[in-house]
Length: 296
Image 1 (cartoon, rainbow, N blue to C red):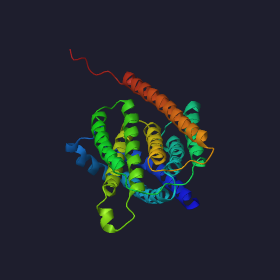
Image 2 (image 1 turned 45 degrees about the vertical axis):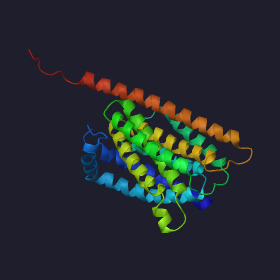
Image 3 (image 1 turned 60 degrees about the vertical axis):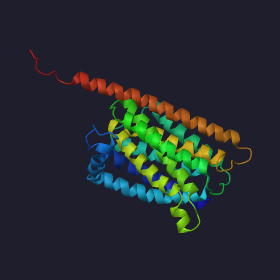
Image 4 (image 1 turned 90 degrees about the horizontal axis):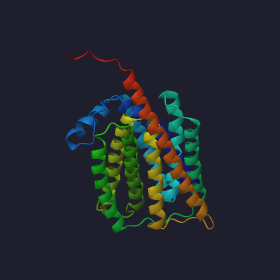
């Protein structure tokens, strides 16, 4: 338990720093980028030319190694709750390095997310046995297709709300990574290569990474990160408890439910305030722009 929790918290720090570096690299790529198969290769190549983005990629890969350890040792909701601590790291660095300013209400929302996730952590019981689940595997595949299609549509917008939606979709993609990692076959190499979850894991991670990069182009780091963290925590947690037999500590059911509710409320408040702020800043920027020459 301690090894798994330590791995989760270590991954959280790496993911939190990587989010800032990923934002720096993503914002140097034209904001017209969208999740279009015809443009995706060019978008990825442009990202890989940014040193900050490459550093973020390395940190994410190392962080995933630690996260994988946590996923195999802990219930999904506890492993994901530990990762959610990256939101605090990202918020602190964003205010220092990215000129993101959080109000008292927004900081309270960040704290609410962390407290809610902490309640999930202390409510954790034993992890269920890793096992194949054909229905869940099909659901993962269908979900990935849906995420890609919705992401392609939303990425055409430069509105602040697109940042939150793309972050939410990225969170669902990372949830797919966690669920796939939990269902990986522990048997022979042949069984591992023959398991669909061996392939849904990297596809989920790659899709989520691109969607998160698109979200970071369109709005603040906090607005992109909060829904991502919330969804990649709550979705696997629910799957773990209701499908994969992850246990909740006896007598702690209400604490677990309260943790989910507090996390959701905190995330919604933060997304709402950040969206309004981004819209106001865009309007101010438009009003302050010098008028061009009269066409007449």
